[in-house]
Length: 303
Length: 178
Image 1 (cartoon, each protein chain N blue to C red):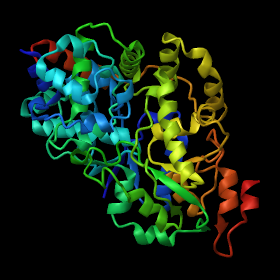
Image 2 (image 1 turned 30 degrees about the horizontal axis):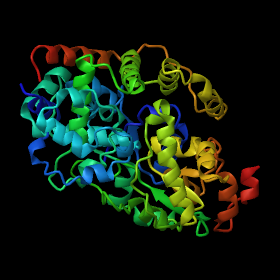
Image 3 (image 1 turned 180 degrees about the vertical axis):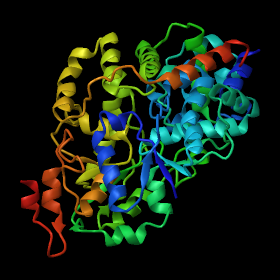
Image 4 (image 1 turned 120 degrees about the vertical axis):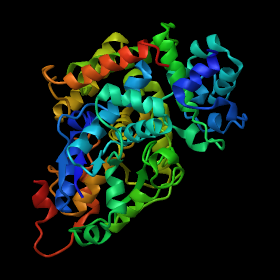
């Protein structure tokens, strides 16, 4: 399978550690990914707010271009990007006039487009279970986390066509494969407020307070996410959330790629574990033990 | 064209399928902050209450989480209808009820036109400057900067493809596309 990698804008800026950990995870699993040349932003909710045609054409340009380059699948680690790609495709498939308008804007054909997927879809659906289980180098069985899927891993079902929109399990299964305990909780698909962090931070703090409360209630050591927006909101707003809750707390927020990479024995710096506002390293050093004799000790690694 | 048909053409949704079960409103994470909750929005669209819809706070507060669309038993996507209403308001020059959102979306697309992709720190900085939230966000910006998560802005040398798509899409739309 020839995977085209679409990092998206966040992964080249604020979520650079997701990008690095995702690339090193694919590397560790011997999956070859190739960057899409000259990709453009998916337009998120901004482009469809300016013009419907622009909102549909912008994400599809990337997919149509990927097809031209011979890619069979486009993998995008940002779940919002994946949603906008898949939703644009659904819209043109339902409306032949829109399809021909977008084709004339893009000057590219839109038939038989490569499928856009989130990395979770690849790891769950493309037969990586054995490889993931056999790559484990660190014992993470003391780590208790909640998996936070947010909005667009599986919702809405007829667009995303992956996992369950109300009770997704893919990330839980993936982390169970490397020995992490995943806790059941009520807020796995609730919204974090997304880009409102920049414009209405109060709303984001409101929504994230509910998420953090739910995670603390079930006794989670950390929240594991698969979207740069979810991560930014949960990781950067903890001081305000503590004020709302009335008690201090530190709840590390990790990308699933960082947890997997850590289980595979990758270096904290490779995974960008030192880039978070809430430092997850003390937790990882406390809860995770190396397995296998020839592995350097965690104290050596953290030095 | 009547208002309901305009929304339907822009969103691809048949609002007449809505039977007002209000599961959308019950699931919406922002319903408590909206003047027209999603189910009320759907009903208002069917009643042709154009002024009420385009002047609501709800069309700006929808973050597009799609909980409403996922839970609708009739397969309608209220979020798509709401986004279509926002598009009509932005195109029609209706003064935005939540101006920060309007500033953010316009600034976002303007930034895309520079390079095809956005530079997240510029979008954040410009949005916060224009909405008067710069000062309180500086400590956080600094924390992100020292962790290497703020890139310097790139030179606007790319983005030709996006500018072309932008120009052609808007031209085609203004020539009678709905």
